[in-house]
Image 1 (cartoon, rainbow, N blue to C red):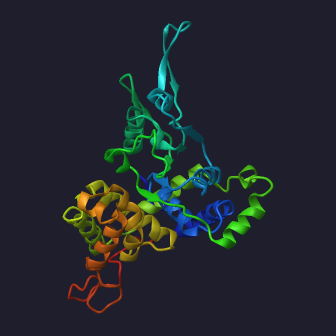
Image 2: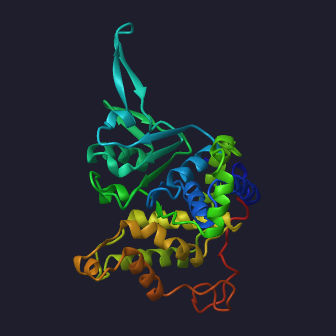
Image 3: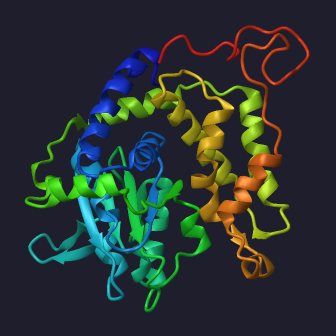
Length: 346
C-alpha cells in the first residue's frame, strides 16, 4: 500500500514536469497549452488522441513527449493491412522446446504512439480496447500485464477520410482527452524555421525524466484532494450532456472519472494539493467533446460538440470560490478553509 511518504512531493512534481515541458516545447513551438494537456493526461493515467490536419506536428508532439522520458517507446503505423497480432503479439510454436512461445507485440511499451489510428480496420482497432482500459493483454487465455507508466498517444487526420475507419464510440471513450494542435502563429512558425531548418531537434532530444519518477508523480496526483462540491460539479456537467437536446449520445460515467482524474493532475501541475472548479472547467471540452454525438438537426445547424460543452459550462452553476464566509459551495455554515481537511503532504 502506498503511503504519502512514498509519493513524490509537489515540489518534485513541479520540477520534473517543468523539465519535461521545456524539453517538449523545444520541439513544439508556440503551443504551451497543448503540451500542458499532454502532460496532464500522462499524470492522470490516461490516453491522448491528437486530431488535426496534416503537417501541424501531431506525430512530432507524441515523439517529443516519449523521448523526453527515459522509458520504452514503440511506434505503430496503422494501415488497412495491420493485424491485431501485430499490436498485441502472437504465440509461436517453438520446435526445440516443443511448446508455444509468446512474442510480445508493439503494445508492450510504456508509451505507445499510434500514428493515423483511423486507417486500421475496426478489428485491429479493437485490439487496443483491453490494453487501454485494463492495462493488460489477454492472448490464448493467458493475461500479460503491461508496464507502468502506460500511455497511448494516437493521431488521426479528420480531413482525409477516404479509406479510413472512424473510431467507434467505445474506443473514443477510452481516450481521456482529445486535442487539436492547430496552426502556429507567425512568430512561432518563423522560430520553427530556425530550429527545424537544419537538423530535426528530435535527434538531439535527451530524456529529462525517468520512468520511475513518472510513477511516483502519478501516485502524487492520486493523492490530490477533491472536495464534495467539486465532485458534484463534475457529475452535473457530465449529466447535462445526457439530456441536452442537441446530443443523441452523452458522456459516460467513464468520462466523469476521466474528468476528475484530469482535474487532479491539473491541480498538481499548478502546485496545489486540491482541485478547484477551475480545473474542471479548463478540461471539460478536451475530456468530454470527443465522446459526444450531435443529433442530425444539430449537425445541419453546424453545432459542434465543443459548442455544446461550452454552453453547458455557461448554464451549470459553479460552486462558490474558496475562502468565503459561508464555506465552499455556499453551504450556509462556517467551515474550515478550503479544501476541507486536505492531505498534509503528497
